[in-house]
Image (cartoon, rainbow, N blue to C red; front, side, top):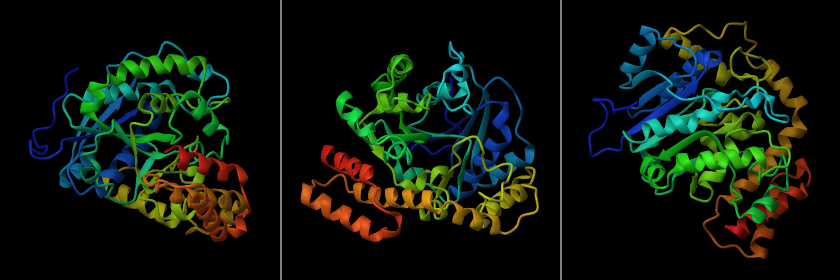
Length: 367
């Protein structure tokens, strides 16, 4: 299928950026909410491409009018991709809520890479609370820009990931593939689709990052892009594992990883900021409202108290990552130990987490 940049897209003097969503029928409504959140907050025009896998359902006219009022366009496309030759749901140890549609991300990116300078791939379970400013991020020379995975990339899920990265010669900066800005020129020049396919097969046989690997495509993207990745600020993709943290409260983009998304609304995980955004999207686009009588965040706060130990772990890891974000500088051991001391003093209530300390040192010293 040949895709052309929309006639209303910026001219040659401006960077052409496409935003790509890929979903099956189960996530249609959630994906529309996600798309609307990015459209209402992104000040520069975007060409949205809504790839539908295994179903066909048009976007309501009022929704299209909403996008047009903000100078965005939308293309609803039957995904012309072959399905994977295996069923990922049957593989033990994997996240059961992810379908084989996840393995078609690179096909969608490839379809758009000829017509656009950059492709913003977005998972349908994300909500934007502010402008991600794609036009300001674009211009980098790496193949992709993405955010750290907060449970895997920090070593919380498996502290040995950094040792394995060292053994296999992989970058220890493991990113989340839910939001990726792809450099189309680099994608084509490095034959990323071919390399992704080869790494996918390797990953089926053995994951170089984790012994009990829960992911399907994410490790493969990390294997394919490796160190040729620009790490974006964590705020642009704060995953739900960091629920109730400061990063979650102030996130530009929240990523509702796991089987439970932002719809239907669950009072324990929905704060007033999220509920207000969902209501605004419904009001502006005509999409069905979030429903349910909301308790104005009381259940959310009670749940925060219940989860305080888990929250402390992530607050501690996020504080250390803010130190690691200075990775362009050269650190000696004394400087690293000093920075870690500062992180511990800032989070005395969370307790000491030796695995995270070692992980941070490896990241800083390797980079």
